[in-house]
Length: 229
Length: 99
Image (cartoon, rainbow over all chains, first blue to last red; front, top):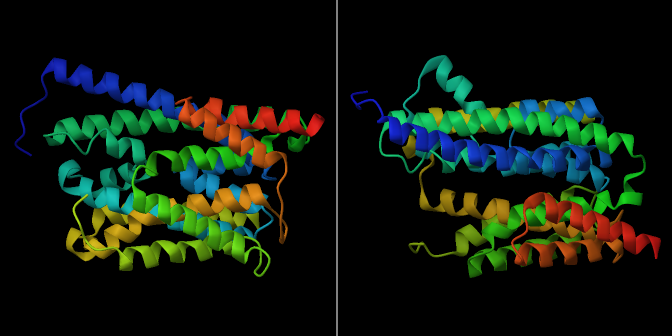
């Protein structure tokens, strides 16, 4: 790369912004830890998810399907479908980050919503890498520490229903969905998907209704005309 | 079984991330693929909310969890932070169960 090194001011501004996002996002981990043990996973399973899967919506999806009584495999499939958006983030970032070999293999683990948001708009490779790594690593460290704290606390308090933690799962999904409901077509997709899921609940094994709702996304993609958004 | 699901999810999600950084863009950068990929999180999250809040086993129910979801909507409209939304819904659902 022939990009010049970063100016000190730009450098510290990128680090400051990235750490801010990292701290705010990492704290969500408390919610995940508590919700996960409330859904019937052990503390070790909960921490393994945050360390190894490390993409929040997928982690919430897996424990959500298990909480609803679904087969863990249905949960894994749902989690992987949600993980496909990271592939698209990677496609956009690959030319900008320009990593190869083991650096690329390591960077892939922290390729998530936040690290993408803090690097995709940078104008040079050094700036993009700095934003990506500072955000990715700070979210990773804090998300895992917070997950452990939430899981231990959730485990210590006993029956989650007493504290309404089963209701927290739906609220967590809604908070993840909320920023995406800004367009009319996304609102329609959300309503249709919820209807498909509830309509199939009485008919198919638990966990499958959520996967059936993925068909709504496919259908909406095919039916939507390609207009600039 | 849960450990198996954790392992499959970990490997699958990592490979999805790595693929994005490794595959030549032309393979996946098509309008249809991008539209579907944008819709998938919306559809799955909406379905997860519906199933999580309004079903119990194979029947549809309305109970304290629905009240919790209503509280979450109000908190999101008020732009409350994530943790306030999640634990606010939990607290209200717990209180409703005590009544």
